[in-house]
Image (cartoon, rainbow, N blue to C red; front, side):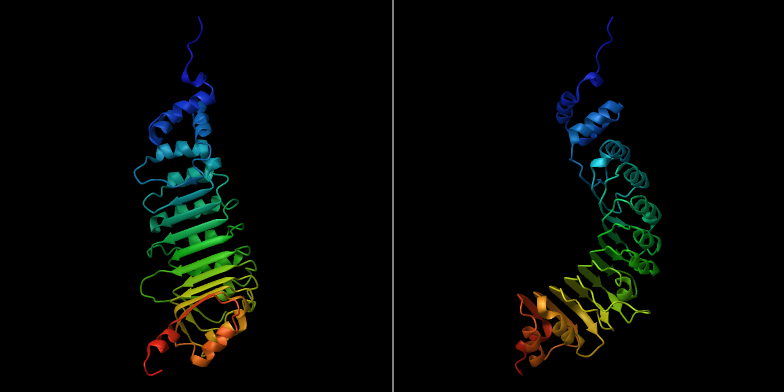
Length: 318
């Protein structure tokens, strides 16, 4: 007597149709976990559906682990909030998602240890990391882990900045860097920005917020050869910035410059390729004459806003 046929005897093309008729992801994963072949069929059915993976808060982690075990190699982007982070989920991603390139994660202090190991376990594949840490997450572990991601091209960070930030100088291939300090009791945080970025010869975009930019402790290159976008907000500038001959976009919003006339002289020196300027500094960097000089030094300028000139234009005494 012949053994009865079961669902696992069906070809992948037929199982694909069966999975298509299941009403939701939970049902599909419940079926996929029954048998290794059904897991393979789920992967065949899903194809690149999970190229971008973002877990939901009320979805069972055990079912997500089934998804990762079968579709992990197809996942290249992962985003996760602190309310959906799970140590078990992180371990599964590190184990199965060998082609993961980009992560966007919000985390809290209780996640910091597992987040550190998560990043280190994916050091060979990650090229883009975005992290947002709440202000209680003050562990240097995370920034130390990021500094070991040798293939990283993009790093966007928002949160408490500690001594670990100095390790970012190891990221010599970085093309985009964002550092936004968020912490209690400080308007700005002292960061050795010029030394951190000194060896980043491919850096094209730099955004910093709520930091103090001061004289570095040791020598640093006085040119950012490939930088095209420089954005500073709520910063204190106490030292000369490197020259940026390819600069196209310059935002200096709500910043305090401790060097008299420096903002104006920086633009005069680097204005050849600048297309956008958005400035609101203290003290005001321009008077009428210097503003016109700056405009003449930027032949490619398409858009500009200067709060000092806006205020002068509204002042009846001018």
